[in-house]
Length: 154
Image (cartoon, rainbow, N blue to C red):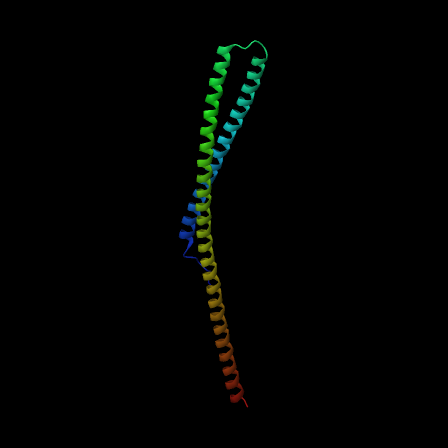
């Protein structure tokens, strides 16, 4: 029996490459999201440290210029935090878009695989029918030979 040979191999490889590229894009977005989270965590720690330092400075004899510098620095940190929060939101949207693209690419690979599986099953069915037909032909010929033999030697 001949072996099934898919004619969809090239298409499947193209679709798998597209899916793998989408996976890489999702991974990049996840890394970007993690990096932003790390920066936000560091900024929050810096802001907490700044608040503690300001409280301690105010307990004693407050140095006005130092307090003003600290407040300016805190405002700058809060601006960076707002910017990072905006970036985080943008990256989250991009990540969702990339995940949707990955789902579509994965679906395309599965469609090609299903079509190929269906074609392979049909090929196997046709081969089984062909084999059965050949076996039936052999059996019929054998039966006819046997009948002729029996008729000849009776």
